[in-house]
Length: 479
Image (cartoon, rainbow, N blue to C red; front, top):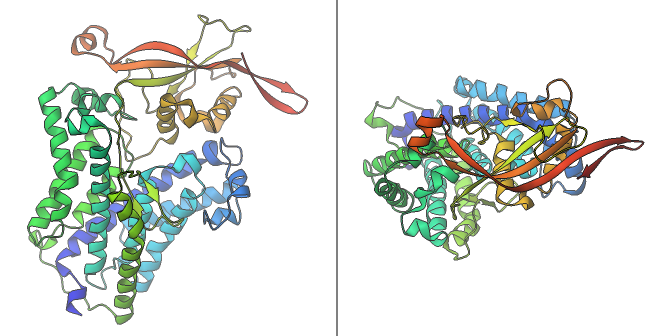
């Protein structure tokens, strides 16, 4: 069936597949290098405890059948290996069915990780990677032209990503309607990047233009993705540009990069290079893709209903496989930035103004003289959750005490998540956490002090806490 294939998109498919494989690589590396302290057997939220009360039907995962840190590491590094193979184009060396199987393996492995990751993996870009990764299984390889239906399904994901983010803004914080949210957002976003300070100090009229362009990109351009070429290509490239603007202004893991790849999949590759001669699609493949399309449209009911609802929610999966989800970001924008600063002391009796030494995090603001770093698309999970903890202690209730306990014993895996341990030789006797008000310094302050941030103490987040070794193990005591 000639309508089934879209040979002009062979280059777009190639770019999309290699880019998606690179994001799989980042996701599996993030899991392999951070899991022990977060969800390992001795982690803050151990997987064995989680699967003990969450059944397989709610969180299908390989780790429901068996968990050990060694097995999790094996799965993560297997995912890294598969991602590298896909980046190198191994799917093009296999028959069509083999390529589909090769793409299915990292999807299944990453699904297993996300479904036991608990709050550390409760981010929209996890579901987005899984949904897009599932569709990539059916995108074909060098043995057939790109299937038009799968390309349209990728655009459908992009529409939901953009509309979800755009509508939640219009329905949420009034500053989006007043075009003033960027007066605050670059300063108060979860993890600023090295250019965020400069973006924050752009003239306010330009901030208003930024917000207006964002509304166009999220609420108008997605409609044009389904118009004839080259209009659809122009809309896709404009969306990709706005996402790249977000890439350089903050750290949002791979959210923006997946969105960019989705946009590039809608670009007509024949505008750059003529498509090669590709074999016709086998009948069985056509049947599978048509079935997939019907299934996705059927499963889209709940996401569409959520989009149209006045009580729209952000980043929701409607099935445990994360196949067709709803998305959204920053329905509200914080006007001020609060940060939890964690400190330790080796004094026998802790004094409020004693010799407290600060722990340094890799990504989140801490030392006012430290320029924010660029980590995205790599995801620093602890740093992100620390931002939520500053918004409300309720976000940290399940894990923060465990985090402090591990600092009090100089737990090696936990300390690997940090940039600086002020107690390298022996653990502190007490650890405390204090809440600070942070704001970007002004141009004058930066020139005179060299500080990118100005901070003011607000109150205690956690009073000085120690551990006592007793007959039955470690017990936490707050003072």
